[in-house]
Image (cartoon, rainbow, N blue to C red):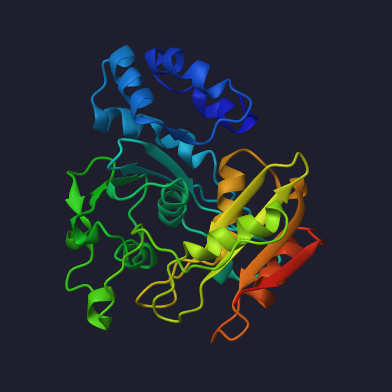
Length: 294
């Protein structure tokens, strides 16, 4: 079991500990549970879905990297597939606060990059801030997305974000988690192809500046992240943070990064390059490259 889970694991109900132990004991627990694993956990513990998800929140929060705030937030996104995706706040000392990844963004992008097609609910241990409410409004679930908080009845995103401003106000038809492909040709080595593939699926309808980041770890594992824009612009999620999120949730550390590669268009109205380099250097990654898309 990864050390980050050990303290909170001991505080879980005994029946859940017994059911979870085989899943958490694998070498690389992916911070997600398949629909079948969720059904098995409910059968073994006698918990309903809501009780199980709330009970799992401490494990999600244990994935947090709150090096600045010292405040752990956990989130679990449920997909239409039935899969449960963990998320947690990720912070990067040595850079600006704008580079921070919130727990809800973490869970949403985790689900997206694992191939989930739509979310039905997100469970969080603290009330979503306005930044996260706006970010979730970009989803193809829309304001129907259920928000579950401890001690409160389920509410929709629409309840938390009334009179919302979103993609429809800008005549944008595609939403986050919709299938997208920008048709860039794959080329180069495995890392380069992973970055281009991530750019292909990025959600960038406002700037038309798709981009993708791929991180190669020292053991050869590659994590890629896609850029996710928002109608309100500022809650947009850079591709580097999306890739780091997957790596951290999977139990890797910053020092495990061997090299990083960004894929973006040279003629785009915005670039991810300078900020990506700044964040990666703050993480002591020195092998950083870029491939220009056409």
